[in-house]
Image: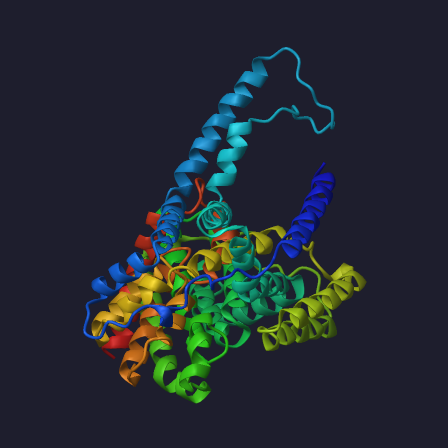
Length: 498
């Protein structure tokens, strides 16, 4: 059944791709409207500029209203999944009372499923929400601007490179050889604390985020989330500690990639435009990030010290399993390095991934099962986010350009919670006259707020996708926000005061 659905989905994708190619004529006017085409308003307030741009291009309001609905939908995802479970339980109870139940595929379960329960499951999947609202957005674009404009925007204007990269890097980072190497490295640090769960907790939340500056943040998030799942979440800590940990993880990964100029998406957006290199990043951002991570970890460790020290390791927590030959691990690291090196060239890193699949098949006895579902869902989420985010520049740019240093830092932190932080920093490069202090404020604010919501930083959906099975009703947006709030304030202190 699954194979048949996959074949049908593949054929549908081919048909859709062919339709887009056939109808993909460029529209008569540029869409979205370029920011420089709006009337300049020297001395005007940000609110006046936003109102003028909304009047000049009324579709701006439509696109932003759809985006707001998508964000609100994201916050309601846990409640929607709860409704799905209730409906499916009622449906299962009705089937139990039925005298005849069909089981044509011999899986021991009745074939009939709850249509509304399945639909609510889909609408409650965080990774699917922005894709669902892309359909609504496309309908609005077609209605107001025409079919050619809608197709051209989705197929030619939006850049999906980051979404594709995250799919590949997540898959490579979650392979058995790479995970074993990361686990062995962190085990060496955890042994300093006796190898207890508390020591693993500190080791993972300190080292893995900093690895994001070298192997990219999505890879670091994948490794950290998988190891936290095995060494910490599997021990069933309290709900408060679960949310504190995932909030801390998201904040640490968001700032942990700022030691270099090539690994964190929000830094990548400005590095070339503003001439920032590795030395600049380490001296201006790196030590703030390291300090913020250490302080945040220390505060949460003290706050939850009793519970963390009471956790007992699982029976198999120290088992390494069958060894992976060093040469197999080395080849995996080469594929990982090549993907990071070619992060801006999808034809090359996707081609490299195809070579990796051949290598994985040839060394299957040293590999774990390749599971693409999680990476593909995360890629789908990010693709939907960039589609919506590309139509929000009309109001974000004047808001950023109207703020001073401290308000800019706070504004970037808050805006990041509702937009991917890479979009915030990219728009900052379009604001003329930014001083070095303002540049520092907007980038540090963007990475500081990167843990407050699942949409605030590109790697967050990867972490949530891996860890959500440890949360009975899914990860609550409010729980995540509260878990990330304290480390966010600590990081803000590190960047703006220290």
